[in-house]
Length: 358
Image (cartoon, rainbow, N blue to C red; front, side):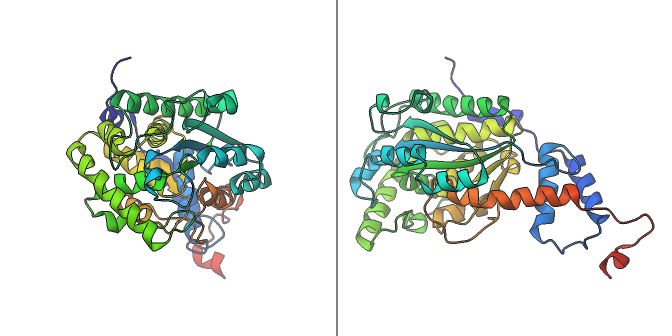
């Protein structure tokens, strides 16, 4: 297997069609509803038109939730309220239909796909379709050692790329992206701190299950220690993912990049997907044009990453649970924008905007 250079994606990824977006903007100006009356739904509809090369925007008919799952050795440092190696139980709740994301997906008739990249469990205990992209069992403890070897990081990126291709080939027209992990927010915070050049305290949040002050201090210290090994490899995104990311984060990064190559729009969820998106942006600066920020999770590292990518969250409902829940909650808004841009009538010829407002 030849080595992969993430910087090569910069030549492979194009922006959504600018001509189509301008045509969508012109059509919006002709609609009976006054411009500005629909708020951000206007821009969202125009983005959908450009991303899907259609005016008006085509309805979102085949969305899918894709969750990358993995455990992180840094959880053993006491950085989370969840037990180290506990991501497998979270995955089983998704598969059983009892997790929040499963409940919401069922209500919206959206299929959910879980991809085990590094769960700390026997793969025989999971369905084969969940484990077939597994790279390793858990990721290394990043405050003391690298999360992965460079070879494992490459394998994880390629796994994410393969999942993106599978979804595009299956006709998925919008991905709702999330993660299922224990310790993942610590790795994500480290990536964001390294890429944004800030201290650990700036990116250390309280996690999906809010942690107490002592746990927060342990988490901050773990990110601080991991940053010592992250900074020397900042110029190499694959090496950075190997040093302080993890298999699930590397796979998510590869997935985001390949989705942009395949022109598949993605709704980002919380801090983990935002951190991976920031890594992907460093490799391919046009890639963020294919993504939406589904919601604000309250994690400072997510806010920092989204600000760097100029992505504004669609929702802010204080949802902290992760697992794609916040991104999935924003899906009806995206579908509403597609419906409005596609079904609202245009003004009769010769009728001005002022007439339409009366």
